[in-house]
Length: 324
Ligand SMILES: Cc1cc2nc3c(=O)[nH]c(=O)nc-3n(C[C@H](O)[C@H](O)[C@H](O)COP(=O)(O)OP(=O)(O)OC[C@H]3O[C@@H](n4cnc5c(N)ncnc54)[C@H](O)[C@@H]3O)c2cc1C
Image 1 (tube, rainbow, N blue to C red):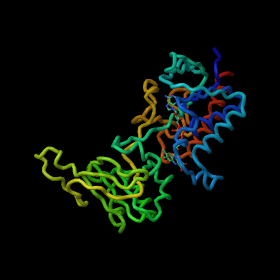
Image 2 (cartoon, rainbow, N blue to C red; image 1 turned 90 degrees about the vertical axis):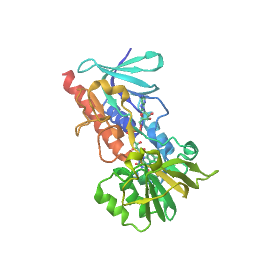
Image 3 (cartoon, rainbow, N blue to C red; image 1 turned 60 degrees about the vertical axis):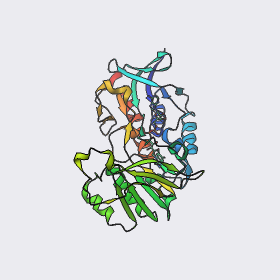
Image 4 (cartoon, helix red, strand yellow; image 1 turned 180 degrees about the horizontal axis):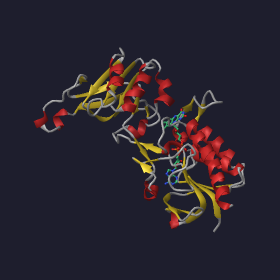
């Protein structure tokens, strides 16, 4: 079995960019993904903030990236689901796959498995996912210009993304399971927006519409709570009973889940995300991480590519330093 210079787990923007940089530094690269290469790009309709493209379909950009990787003979791609990464020493890592328990060996490993969005799992969600329901305001907010929009969630990302969306949409309604839990100053800024309504203590029951999303069905959840606590105290509006809030689009911000279950034993995680330094090095020598999976501020394609470039380059430096 070959010993690859670099094994990349995850062929999204971070993994694919790392592969290109590593191959150009003369490394042999095995890039593994459980799905088609492209990562979250594949589920993105329009990308309007990737430098050089004023508007490109996500799947098209993903294909361009993958085709770019395939111009290097040193990059091999394989469909595999990675279930474990084992550190066997400074220049030996094992990557274990679900399929037949196959084990690949690499001198270095890059973790670029991104995140997945927490979803509501409510009726209609599958039907309108990517077609009315979005998980990214920076990406899909522009489509809400002059339209009615609902945000689900009440934490920091929900409130911050709502501030952004409120300046685009005609109306914005936040529905949240509890009260707003974001930074109070940011919540107050949102409350001051004239086109914003905030309905707290709401459960989302489902999404309405035939071919196009037309509304969100919600129900006040205070009756479901322990009656000893009485009605919830809040400065925000309460919508009692069950209602359909008409809208053209919904954004769900109820949390992200980093895809790191397979590397839990390496001791490199902070609340599920991989901690890295500015060189994309984890605490395990020879194991790097890049893209949405790392602890970072802005999770976007362009920043994932940037992390990947650094990681690919650093893997080459690491091998050079250890092979002397
Ligand atoms: C709806 C939507 C719209 C977006 N719009 C934009 C936009 O307009 N502009 C922008 O810049 N960004 C946008 N983003 C964000 C952008 O897509 C991400 O920031 C970017 O894809 C992160 O790249 P990544 O390589 O870190 O991770 P990902 O793209 O998440 O790729 C991770 C890859 O790892 C694979 N993987 C996971 N676990 C395993 C495993 N165990 N074994 C093997 N493979 C595994 C996955 O299959 C996936 O292919 C959007 C995201 C979404 C969801």
